[in-house]
Length: 310
Length: 310
Image (cartoon, rainbow over all chains, first blue to last red):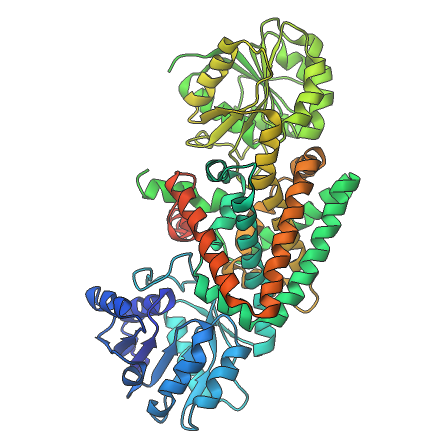
C-alpha cells in the first residue's frame, strides 16, 4: 500500500483515532503520525503503547506541517479545538472530523479555518462500547461505512485523497448532505442509544426487582441494550445536545408507535402484534445480507467465549 | 453422566426442545427421547436430522409412559395442549414447561392434570433469534439460568430430579414465585423486546430515510435492536398477551423515564444526560462480571466473523 498523506495529525486519542493509528501504521498510509490528547494521562498511555510517532502537548503544535488533520474529539469540544488550531494549519492541509453529528460540527469548525484549508466533515460508522487510547484496533473500520458530508465547491481531488486513505483502512465511503446524515443517524444510532439508556435506567430504578436479578437474568434480551448503554457518556451527551431536532423528531415517532403497540397489548389485539413482529424480522435479514452484522446466533457470543477460553 | 429420566417427551420441537434433545443425548440423560410437533413439516425435519428416538403424530401418543413431559410450545397454545395430554399422562410423571410467562401457564395447565402428576413450571432463560427444529444446539443452556416456579406442596424429590437434569445440561437453576418471575421478566426481557420491535418498526415507516440506508448504516446501534426484533412472532405475541399487566406497568415507567430524558435534550440539560449515561455503564459491567455476557467488543462479532471464514 502506498503512502497517502505525509503527516497525519490525530487530535483526540480515543477509540476512533487509536484505531486509525493502528490501521494507517499497518499499511504505511501515513509518513508520520502525530498525536495530541487534552488529557495528560491519555498522552502518557499513547507514548507508552507507541500509538503515534510523536505525541504533542498542544493541538496547535500537533497540526503544524500536517497535510491531514483529524478532529477526533466529542462534538461539544469541536468549536474550541477549531479555534485553537485554525491559525496553525498548513496551507493546502485537509481537515476532517469523526463526529457523529455533522451540521453542528460544520457550524463549529468551518468559520475557524483559513481559505487555504479544505474541510471535509466525516463520520466513521464504526465503534464498540469501549473508549480511550487502548481500545483501538486496526480492523475496526473493515467493511464499515465512513460517511463524508463535503461542503459545496470542495476540490474533488482533496475528497478523493481522503477517500483513498479511508478505503485503504477497509472502510466503505459514501457521501451525503449533512442534514440528511443527521436524520439518518438519529434513526439508526442516536434514538436507539437513548432508548437503550432509558431501558437500563428503568431497570436500575425499579424497587421490586433487584439489580442482581436484572444482571443475573439479563441474557433474555436486556443485555443487548446494556452494550450500547455503556458507550462514552460525554460523546453521547454531545450527540443529543447537537442533533436535538432530528432526535426529538424520531423520538416523537417512536413514542407514537410504542403507544400503538401498548394499546394492542391492552386490548388483546394479537393479530396486530403478530403482523408487526413479522415485518421487523425482514429488516434483520436485510442487515445480515448487506454484511452489516453476523448471522451467527446471539451475535456469535459463543464463538467469542470460546476464543476467550471460557 | 447418569440417566435422570427413563423417557422424556418433548412437545413442540423448536429452539428450546431441540437444544434439550441435543444436550440430553450428548450426556445420556434420558433413556428415550420422544418428540411431537403440531406441524407435519417440523416432524419430518426432526425425523430427518434424528432429533428424537421416536417422533409421534399426536401429543397424546408422545406422552404415554413418559416420566418427564416438556411443554415447549408458545404460551398461547399451552391450554389446548394440556387438555389434550391430561388424560394420557402416566401416574408419577413430572410435567414441566418452558414458557416465558408463568402465571398464565399455571392457570392454563394445572387444571388439566390429574392428581398423580407433578407440574413444575419452568423457564430456561436462554435463546437466540432463531427458531425451529434445526436451530437447537447442545450448549444453549451452558451458564444460563433456568427458573422454576413450583406450586406450594410440590414433592421436593420431584423438583430435585428435574433440577438434576437441567444442571446436567449446563443450566443454573433457581426458584421463585410465579408472579415475581413475571415482573422480573417484564423488565429484563419482555419490555426490551417490545421496545426493540418498536424501534425497528419506526425505521421501517420513516419516509425520509430509505430502508437501504437503515440497513447499510445499522452498525451504529440499530443492528443490536434488530437481533431481538427478529425473534419468533407467535411466541412474542403470546408473551405480551399473557403477561399484560406486568408489561404495561414497566412500559409506563419506561415512557416516564424517556420523557424525562427527552425533556433534558429539549432544554439542553447536559449534566442530567451525562449523569444518567454514566450510571448505566455500571450495570453493563455487572452483567459481564456475572458471566452473563462476553466482554469482547461488539459482543465478539469479529471472532464470529473470523470463525465463519469471512
